[in-house]
Image (cartoon, rainbow, N blue to C red; front, side):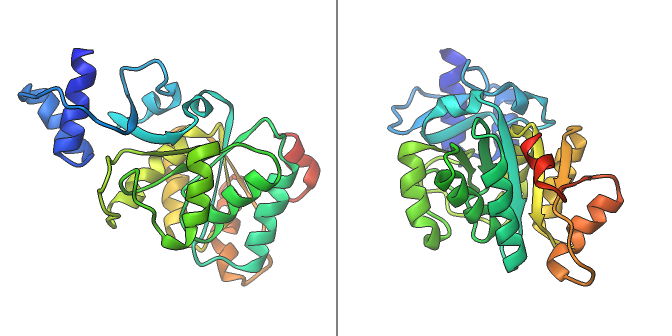
Amino acid sequence: MFERNKILYYALKYQGDWSSIARAIQRKESYQEVPYPLNYVTILDEAYPNSLKELRYPPWILFYKGDITLLKKEKISIIGSRDHCEYGRSSTEEVIQNLPSSYVIVSGLAKGIDAYAHQYAIHYGHSTIGVIGCGIDVIYPKQNAYLYKEMENQHLIISEYPGKVPPRKEHFPWRNRIIASLGKALIVTDAKRHSGTMLTVNEAISLSKDIYCIPYPYRVKNGEGCNLLISQGAFILNDISLIRAL
């Protein structure tokens, strides 16, 4: 309990910044026991997922809303571009519709493909986890407020950042390591050659996760990243039977 309270105190003091928390732990900074109204688990808790411990920089703490037991279930991470194309959207739906319903769908609760991944997961009977890059009580982007409200009650939203921490540009590439780590595999349904989606892929590769990609027609910008990954050895999802067999 001593160490758990210390992690919470540092996380609140430094607004969830991983490096600042690490320095505070190393220096054995003084701390106080503080009451905190929101739910959280630390790296010391049984509910903390083992897959995150495989990261080079595992989160010290996860603030959450919803069903924390979903972290212990088998998961698939699905990602794609914010500025998606219709083919990417429909491919996301087809993938989720045909995945075994036992899989929990993990994505980033961003606009675009992430939002569709959560939406279709709920529609087709999957549980879903959203990993966000801001305070656990901050809804961003605002257009996903309806998803946030549903997921915080029936599914799960997690964040390294305590309440009221605003979304910052550097948070989103950093949170991608969590998305990559949680799933047993990573599915990419829409990706330009240079995009934040590719950062998540790199994290998954570093963890030796299997990467699956939707193939795209020639010269479709939103598929250049997918086709590149396939050419580099990612699995190609070009048949429904392959999706059902995951």
